[in-house]
Length: 338
Image (cartoon, rainbow, N blue to C red; front, side, top):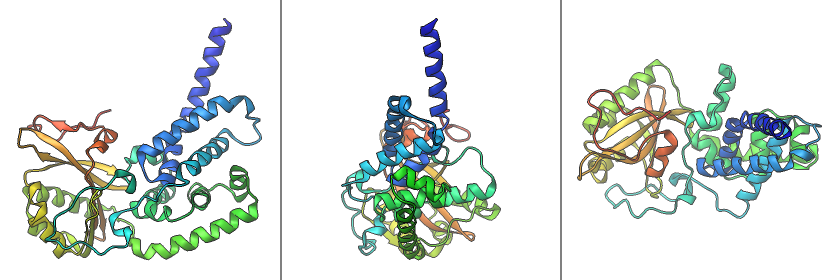
């Protein structure tokens, strides 16, 4: 009987911890810029919580205590690492369109996309969801990486998750004064980068129609139509390559040049980082289709402002999709797993 009671208590604890897993993943993703790192950080948080539960005295809520552990894990992971970025954030000029794409660089250098269901709340009122979407936007996550890890934690805990200054001070073993000072410095850094990030995506009925036209044009590989769907100053990033482009005309030249190998590709609609996204399958010369990239499309006021293509097939399982399809479905598109 004692064993059954112990197992029941353990099961209840697992359920309580798992109830916070999704929001902790979103927090760790904002801190670390990678869904893989975020998963590792959350798993480590759960392990530490299990081991330390006997010492949890209940002075704070379980949620606050878990965030304290997660913050320590993320700060430890971020310490000594180079910051993750998007190609356009590295300070170099956009690439000449005629040049080769070049060799890929290590994945640890780049911000990586995260599926919405992994990092956004399952239930929230519209105002809260709008804040959550903006706080996982690629440009926002990239800007966060410019902050020291503790400033990063203070900003996310205070401005995104709405913890009080006293709660954050407790989580960081700091004074309220130092938390407020760190928050002021973090906000100043983020404000300086806000203009570079551009306006947030707009996601109304007009944008839904825009995305339908984008998919149709891409699968036909109608470059003229694709270019017409872009803002004149649209930006394209393509990690893990350092290549980035600014301007609809240059993006069009790229599509007609190095990008022409994408003819015959197919797209699967997704949602990532609070914006529309697509899994891009390229036709395989050996037959079927193979995973090529996860592309995030950011529409602003009826035209596409930013294209971020992550040429990382290892991301596909995160979105419940296989890395290879023997054939394309005769009707519709491949379904996401789960």
